[in-house]
Image 1 (tube, rainbow, N blue to C red):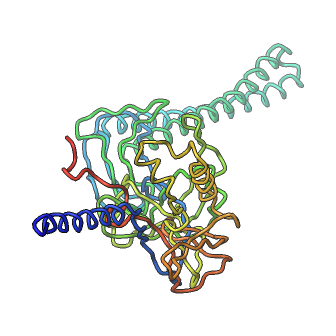
Image 2 (cartoon, rainbow, N blue to C red; image 1 turned 180 degrees about the vertical axis):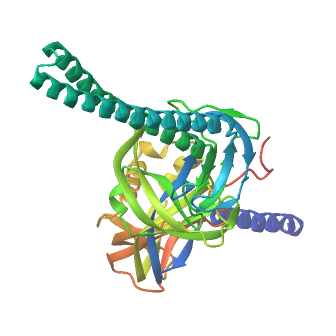
Length: 416
């Protein structure tokens, strides 16, 4: 009997321990919560957009006369002054045209002198014949011939004067074309583009070719951004803006909204409005054509209580939800799923008293607190009303003891 007792007693002890361990480990795991303390700080609400940097004034320089380029005085990035020669078209043909027009003008002046001599002679003849007609020496027909010659001489004066005006106009046009053969900068600025070379023939027509592109002042630039119609009501002239460019990804530049254009731009049924950001570029780091990622500051509040966005998205998990998740069930099929969908719909609204956050009670359970929120910067939301104070710990994530947040993986590692 003693031998049997020695065998049975340990077995009974092991059975009791096994049964106790079974019921102990069968208990549902205790939930764990990750929290963050509420803090005061600044919240900046912003509208994001993408645009292109350009000079405020960009002038395309063409030519008003046709010919062959004989000289180029500037190149890319050359600083220029207003009126400075930047290119020269071969002036030989234009010089010839000026000489010819000048000769025509001199010839017209000579013709006017000849017409005046003719008029003086016709006037003397008319006066003499008038006296002779009074004395009865000549016939009336001779008097009529003299009168006709005088009238023709007067007309010749007018014709000669008109010819002088025509030749002077032609001379002025030839001299203007000769002056246009020297292409000059219309503004002070920097040459950002040169599209011609020496020896190239340029033709002036209805569409004037662009020889140079000159940026008037690269120390002052602008960004033309496209703001979505849902955000344009928040953007106003004078608001500050920050932006970055790919050339300097670690540096933030600043600007100011200087214009909001009313003309809509429709691209694939998406309506946007061009918003112009004025930028100072004194160090000339920014180049025309750079892509800028812009953030327009629409509203800023300092020293406000900030709620993490994750706290507004958090909803406590129930045992039914966990069981459904383990069994592959869809949470939306039960009341818990409906509650999650309702919470998601409430959390999607930016304002309203229907939002809730959860505090961690002393016994380790969550306590719901209704809040009303204000502006958001994407990471934090302003607390407008709600029974919360600074340093309160709000729950942002829930996990089960022994599990990692976000789900439990296979003990053997991921399947490939």
